[in-house]
Amino acid sequence: MSKKTPLDTSKPKVPGEEETPKQRRQLLYTAIAYHTTKRKLLHFVLPSIALFVGALLLCKFLLADGMEKIDAIGIAVAVFVFYSWFAFTIAWPLLGQRFLLEVETLFGPRTREGLWEQFYTKTVKRTGLDVFATAKSVNEYDTSNWVKLNKAAAKHKTS
Image (cartoon, rainbow, N blue to C red; front, side, top):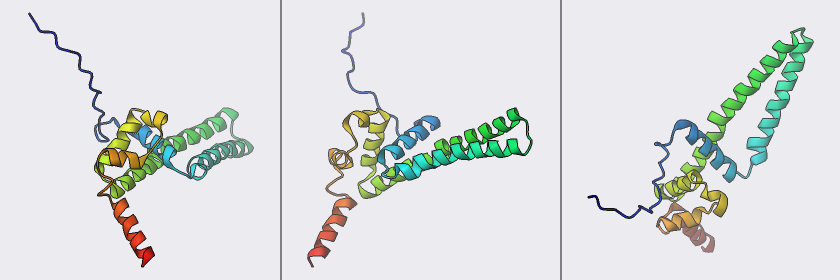
């Protein structure tokens, strides 16, 4: 006879950045970049509009050059898809990675892991992003470069 064990109520382990599949990791980095940047217009909106307008202008140019309608539309759509793919897989994820690297530099690796977990589990949508609270919850705030830099700046300001 087997003994019944109580259900394991601990939360499932969130995979780290390296264990996360590449496509999911890129989408999470993009979400981090979009959520954390103050320059959404510059990094996301304007490039998307420019890409769309560029594809339309390319289509118009190809039609004026005498190309068949279906070919011109196909080429413009292919260019639009390629550059959209580039933005989602390379450009925007790099912004998210840069943010996490800056957090790790200022606070530490556990804070970075805590933020990764918040985005992975989507709790950041409900609770909002609070880097300081995350750093404090993993005991990296008091010894962080952020605190050291602020103390040095305050000391320099009073001198």
